[in-house]
Image 1 (cartoon, rainbow, N blue to C red):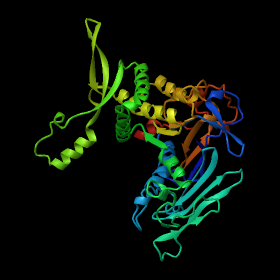
Image 2: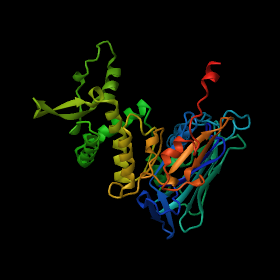
Image 3: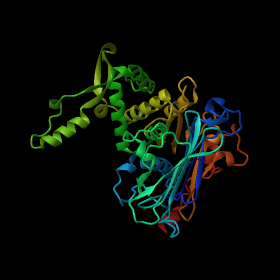
Image 4: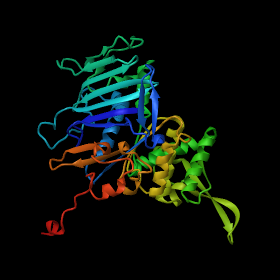
Length: 435
């Protein structure tokens, strides 16, 4: 569960921008919030969903990308070679004072009823600092901290382990372009740190406009529904797609055979084999078959070949959403409304706000342009965020809760359309364009 996330000097997010899932004191739409009781008996009231609006190129996608960049760095930095540049280092480049400066991330989260805070400072080819604290009894205690390699005589840095870290029989060295937390994936299991690593690995961040993301998600969901043990999940996903009026009765995933592909003979066997392994699993949509409007049988269509783009997007996004609702966790989408009807988007959002469909308090964060989702019956004001870019190219991320005069009963959509929130595109006059 996310409490707070802040980022500084990433793309257009030059100054520190703080995003929070903390709920305010309002009693409005209590189903949209939940209370976590920590091991120290303190309670935190959090939001189940949050939405980010903004004009094109205002920085809302950069905010989503900053969450992905942190996850990617944690789960991939052990693959970096000595001295190799860090791919996700993308500082603000429109100011000479920041284009070579550190990108700063800070995230406060809850895992197993304990609050943690993780901070990272990233430069072009090194980690400048990395600190992991937690609050087992209310006050802060350090698990580890490391700082950049100042002497440049070695390829690694020494990590300082906190006295509260369980089992210190672990290496205290890491390459200066690698995160220490990354060490505790599958290769170096540790009772405390591996669990935290898995928290970030399971953190889902997707761009619904990116066809590669949608295809990757589709393959993951297909693998899951192909396993008979996941029949309950398959039934729920089939129902979700059915209520979207797709006329699909059920989904089915199965493996094709090599001779089903008819690949040209001149293609080398190793390429054929790789192609087959990547594409052998296919998902089929089962439809009713009619004879003079009388149901006589069923027919199956290849989801990728014969179904609409909207259906394919719903299969991918709906699948990962149902997984999160089932297991708990965090799902982040850029452009959630891509190819989906606004009413269907609202339904997906409401799944998170309903205690029946979301018993484990999964959280949804997404960016969108779809104004009709700004519904006072769906969101509280503390769930709504905006991005706005100034003339210097800097993005400001701000919450609707900070807008004077706004109440949970306000017509959010009307306020947004009339520019009271900002975050709207400023369209130049025709004369300016055509002079």
